Length: 352
Image (cartoon, rainbow, N blue to C red; front, side, top):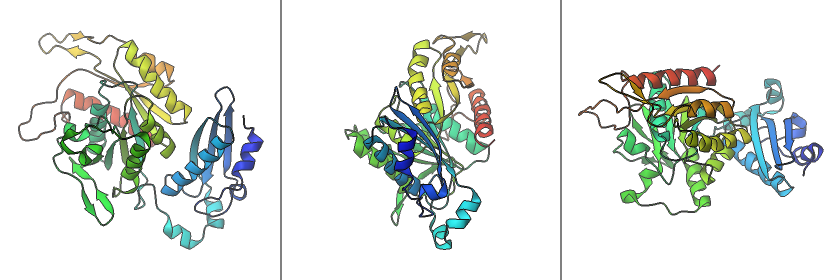
């Protein structure tokens, strides 16, 4: 297994993609943690501009070098170098060329919504959390990264398709939220039979080839589990935060813990747990029936050392003949109000 000294020797000659000088000169290697039993290397690096396409390339380079030299898995976190270092080394021409991961100078907060298994309402949580963030005045986008089981367009009642302007894809906007999904590029709900690397390229395109404009938040609806797409997101977005969705059933919480542990292993911050389908409340008696058991959310939060952001009951959105959006809860709906509280907690945690 690699030692800290060996890792420093491997990384020191690598150049910062913005300042064009080595990590050794910028003192860009901030933390190195080695878990020898799992052959895992965790790094904290400082560069001229995090959350950019150039950071993605640097990240892939570093992961490749460390894996080639004995690391089995690599976790990376990036932060920005101090202003005095940037001003000392960065030419004005380079500053003008800086582009973020999404282009156009947008630096949103990335939030991945994940689960251990399917059928727990992860996509429903994604669209309603996005809607609540938008209602709180934020500019929001969604990437439907559940490429095999895409459902966001149908849930939001999206009937249009993205357009192309120049070399950029223009996302569809619905209720003020921008959306891109594999579902837009598949005819007649055809099954996806691509292999992992092809899917990774599509996900990369959702970041680099889509004209997102200015965003405050970009939510990613991940596939359930810890497969290729989830791994790609962890490698592409080291600063991504995560929300883990589960049901109250202990088994669902146990499986969801795998997704949460993967987030922790790759140094992603977990914002909290959302317990969906927490109970059914009778409109006639007001009594709560815990159809899927109790305690799963709290149990999962305890394992992941985080908190439960909210408990969401079983209930349909109000029927609205004028607006087709089968999975979006209205702002005045009881569950809509719960999502409002969850979104406020997310903003407080992310922007503190």
